[in-house]
Length: 438
Image (cartoon, rainbow, N blue to C red; front, top):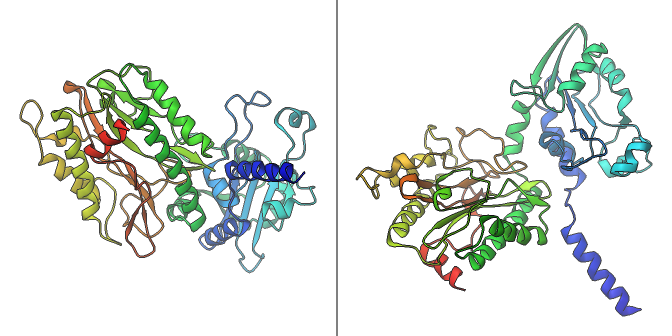
């Protein structure tokens, strides 16, 4: 019996380690408090994503990023209302959950409802109401005759809030004069600064993805399909706890190494090719983004090594140029790290026609990473403690079927110094060759 119990505990512990990690309710409440302080007299009305496919959930369900950031709620169809205290009303925050639909739940599983005894404890909200009451709550709390509503309606197309906001208009939920403003303008600056729990989740995703890249270095060989190598990497980070890839894995060899977002992964790696591996997993909704470039044969040619070393030099130049509270990641922003990397590439090496290589660095150097692999944030603003971003120079020369990208994850620490989250993964040409030889 003792042995049985010990094995059971070990299995449960292993399962728990691989289960979705949600931060404490207090973390989400703190985010809502920070947002409420910026709403003024406005009211936030935000909707979760829906199970648009009904019972045929072929692609699964993933919560809207902004909604999850504020609530930690992963089930579909919910709504969030936040109204700051304004003298006429107390501070109000309500999570609205859809009423139970037994027929739907037969297909997609039981859902927590507002009538569940543990709804408040599970969600961390003092008020949890059935979604049917949303319209009446808005009528009660919105000032009349003028109101400002922050929601995720943008010019980029439909969002989870587009249809429900239209219905609320039809149901006369708003006063005569209502101004709709984009909620992402307030939420994005909050999301750009990661708290300790978010950083821990990004570290988990990064550590698992580093092991996936190490496995690829051991496995890559001539004659292997790009998709096979991508599958090995996905297996490695998923078996370590990632729920899936943070983006479509990019495994491009030969000419495909010069295609930035090549994701067909349908080619066969050949002797003498380089292969670009831009692959990262997602851990509890938080992404990572790592790229390495390998010689398929296990050894760089002199020309490949030359270009590889220039790309690595550009990454180091950007790191050396970093200044706390000053550096930015935008291509044209003042004090941009991009400019340091570009200048290095453009002053080292030539193409086959004797021209500088800057023309072959055709993308930005960095982007923020968080709930989305290309996370929200102002590229022109100075980097601040808690920001997580990539540094990823690259050179892509189609004429030579030669593409190289090196990408690593960085965090601005509390003291303003850079912390490399993907440290330890082979990076120099010699380190890569030794890792592939093993």
